[in-house]
Image (cartoon, rainbow over all chains, first blue to last red; front, top):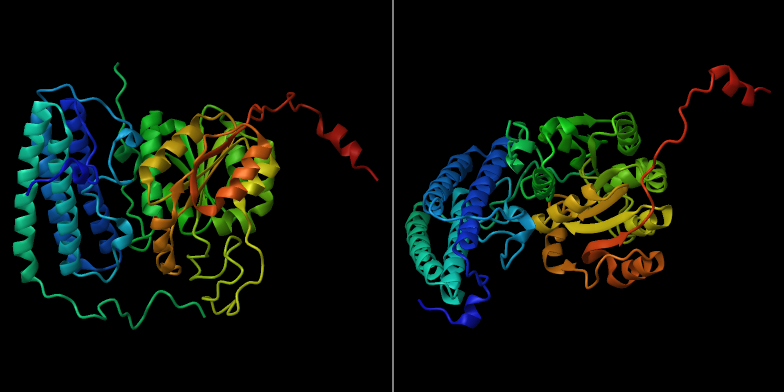
Length: 181
Length: 274
């Protein structure tokens, strides 16, 4: 699906240097892996073991993708960017799931929804980079990465029906932590 | 030997945080470790000091020197650490209850003393660890605690206005939902010579679930940092509690103890003789 430059600006910055583009790609995957691990850790601590394995698996996938980007990046000069020098359109990278959207009673269905949201944002980020960049190499790489992200989106869409959508009161807790009397 | 470039991960310990899933403090921990990694100091040259509370658990989650101290006394402890070991980079982590109620007195004097350290105060306007009571920064009409069912009826403390009045020389506000921007503020705070305070709006999604909305309420300040006290005060009042950035960078030098402190005890005792 093509994207207009106006739409692309909502999802991606204009990156005309291959090294800078790859620095963003590496950070995107590494930070996604770290966030999934962080979520797995917090679920482990809160005894929600059902979702830990899935978060770990997603972290592993992100690390694999980071490794792929790293191999491509080895051919280029990739600058070190300080955390605040990345040009994400949002405060965090597109595949870093918002930490405040997690819940100690979340289910695998929620985990996959979170992952789907992240992958869709990742896909739009790369598609946007491809539209906005003036550099042919960046365009080519960004298109390739966007296609890969589309495959991840499709995979997740296949996985989601395997897990039933939880009932409306899934977060109800008969022994809630929020008791303050 | 070539220096090894440390990453944010190197500054994290193997201890897994026990914060509630969704807590803003996860991102504050990430921002602190990112800032330290950019600063590049070896692990043994950094100390993180805290008091008591959810956010005060941070020293356990870092791999640098740490001291999880008594409630409200983190700034006193940290001042001692810095004066005894001026070579260390000293950070203080804590919450609004720890720092502004139990530690309120120490807060005022840490601001005016201006010892070179960086105070990251995570403000969620509630005592989370004790299950959701009103804190010094809670709005007067917050009624969700059974201890204060009609609200506290007491004006909330304005930490940065207080810090400005008490003489703090680096005053900033960040948001846990923007960990990259927050890392920059902490990095700048560490680099500032003297006492730096960074108030971090860090939602408690368990006892203040409505704070999830902060994400859409926070915005970057329209101004650059100023060294003018009146101007900084005006900006704090004008922009309110939901603007982020460095508000004030003052010119006063960091605290430097004067004299050798070798007066005999007997001489000192004479001053107190009745």
